[in-house]
Length: 204
Image 1 (tube, rainbow, N blue to C red):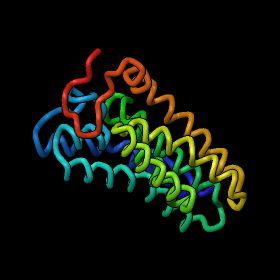
Image 2 (image 1 turned 45 degrees about the vertical axis):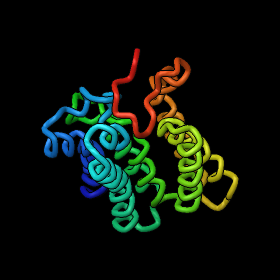
Image 3 (image 1 turned 30 degrees about the vertical axis):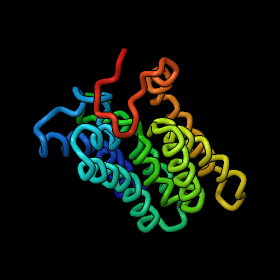
Image 4 (image 1 turned 60 degrees about the horizontal axis):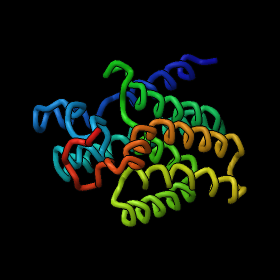
């Protein structure tokens, strides 16, 4: 095992943990995004609370946090897709349980999209289409996110052209995203879930 094989995964976790939404909200409006809207430091809440461009900036940054480690690992360790998977997984873990915010981060959707955009480009594109359709039909980012998370491993397995460990990783990440969306599911069932453009506080 080389030093690079140790440093790159650790760096992937640290990069994934950079709290993009929190920093963007802090330096554009001087607010703690965790105390506004849904309380989540992800792109959707930043979009609703801070503004359109801040939301898109957060989405782009969070996706890049997933894509860059996988892309770098695939170049640094050619042919070793397991290292790319490890770095991607650690970037997602870093985002969801970020060391910079007391191990309480985002839901992992955008960072996962970046990871699987590098690992599973066609299934990820298909999942994005489902995401757009689900959001348009429901008005809820959370429903689109969960729908995309579910469809990604299904398409990956169905395609049959990707290494099985990557497809299984997509399944595990799907379960993680569903887990991080449990509060959203509860609000949906109670009829209190925030819509995409609703910046109001969620009702209890």
